[in-house]
Length: 301
Image 1 (tube, rainbow, N blue to C red):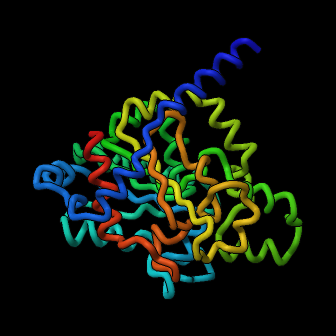
Image 2: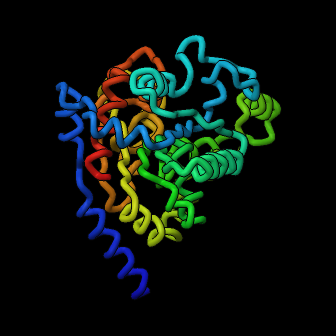
């Protein structure tokens, strides 16, 4: 009990020391200060950028046949805006990794392949992850810490590190034996195990088990977490808002998107979809948003 109490006290202290970069983000985003300098562009041009999408990504990628439902004709492809900025405007080497809503192991396997590619090319990797994609990367790096040497930085967008109440509600109130549900999940390429690992119970246990490893990772590497808050604003996630207590992006509680003592950004008016796709309530310009994220991260490198 004494050791547990000391651990909890230590975690409380480190969280209290976390730097809130929200004001800095807003200042950069709202002025031309977000633009990358020549030195920053030169530095980033030496890296391989990898985007890791989240759950249901298969339904928002036009050429992904694993999902029988395709929303990309409405929203554009997952991370399309960010990829366009990096590859077209700056000619950086960037690609979107193939995600899996069926099994996180598939996503982790593709992350390992990306790291191997960077290693062969003698280039460091910079990861930009959304939602479940961030969970996959975090699990991969803390369970295989040697891979961290290949990383130049990480941007975690709206990843539920401490879980989401929506996953709890889904598993609690849904009959997993339902033929209709089974058919829908198959159409979407979603595995029940994937939903389970997003529950608050599963994620909080993971965070507790690997707390020292996670804090070591955030001290070793340039890492920024970004969480959205859409309470009181127009959002497609309005039906899910009452299911989450406190501030959230409609799927992930803001506090769940933070990593202990690591630097974080709170994005006002950002729901869980608008940072990575084209949606009805879009409050962020993808080009400016991408440059601002990289500008913030450059200051930590």
